[in-house]
Structure formats: C-alpha cells, structure tokens
Length: 250
Image: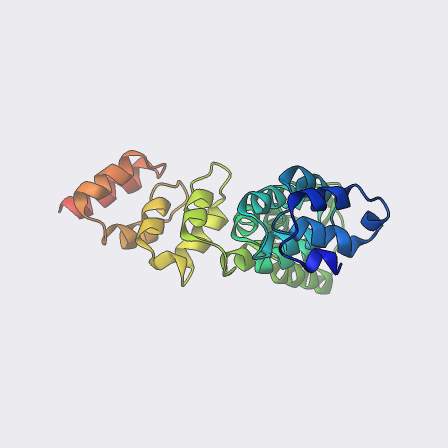
C-alpha cells in the first residue's frame, strides 16, 4: 500500500505487482492498484470485474483514475444493476457517476412500485406479488399502506434525477431512449432543475409521453420554425402536435 501511494510508479512495476498473488489477496491492494493513474488498462479492468458494487463506484469516482478506465468500470457497474438490491440501487442513484445515474433513470424497480400503488389504490384486486405475478389473496389495509409507503420511499428514479453528477446530455439521451417510461418523462418535465432547460424541453417534446399541458407550456418558448423541426421527429400523438402548431402559427 505504501508503494501504491507513489504517483510516479511506472506501468511495468504496477504490472509486476498485479502478478503477485499474495499481494492481490488484499482487497485494499487491488482497489489501490486499479485506482493508480499508471496502471495499464489490461491490468486494471479485469481486476475491477472482481470488485463489489460500492468498490466499483469508488474507483469510478476517483479523480486520478484515467477516463477510459472509469468508463469501463461504469460499464461493469451498469451491467450489474439488475442483480443488486433496491437499497444498493438507491445509494448508487444518489452517489454514483452520471452514467450510472442515467442508467438508473430506467430502473425496473419503479415498475414494481407502480404495481404496489395500483393495489393500494384499488385498481388491482388486493393480492400479493409472487414470481412476478399478481396472485389473489386477502391483504390487510395496514400491510397495503406499509407496502405503498416502502415502495415510494425506495424509488430510484427521483434520486437519480437529483444526482449532482447527472448532466443535461445524459438526461436527454435517457428520455429519448425507446425504453423511457411515461413516469420518467413526466418526472423530468416536473423537475425543478431539468424542466427549465431549453434543450431538455425540446427533447421532451420529441417523446410520446408528454402531457398536452406540459407540451403547450414548453412549446411557447420555442420559435415556430424550430418547433416544426422538433415536432417532425416527435412521437407525440398527432392531435397534440397539431394543436401545438396551431398555437405557434397563430
């Protein structure tokens, strides 16, 4: 560990250290080796694949790790998101890199929360979720309320939107993806920070899930020629696009 604190170590020394089986028995040594700015990529990336979730996050956020290694580490972390717990996803949404936060904007946990909400609202017969299916069963009111509260408190998407490392470009990329849900589009359209950005408003107008009220609000700040260009590639319903153009062209 004392050796790895030296920033002037040449790649050859770090590569030799990576071949020392005794040294690599230490988790701290492996993290320090992957985090060293001169560790060759063919050494650091395979080692990083052995790390736990939050060790990956720590490496990706280190200011001295080369950019290409950070991208590779983020990719490893993103590939594991479906396998980690809701609590871990929530922590990652709040603290991880912008790329990980953007991936969590499409988090599948939000769909599960919607099912619980639907049960609590009476839209689905009272039941329990087993193996991904809704099975009929009697559920007491207090258990429904507790489940609904827990689902709301653990939603990952709102936490990801508040991540300070999330960028405008990443938000735009997320809302324009085919997998973007109506919940995501509506959350971005209501968000105090993101909903004010002109480029994000234009991106939201290209989605299929924006409400008429929000579409009218966002379109008023866009010049008519640019709005026509935006709507030409928009997935909004035709009736909404027609009304926006009528408003813009007066």
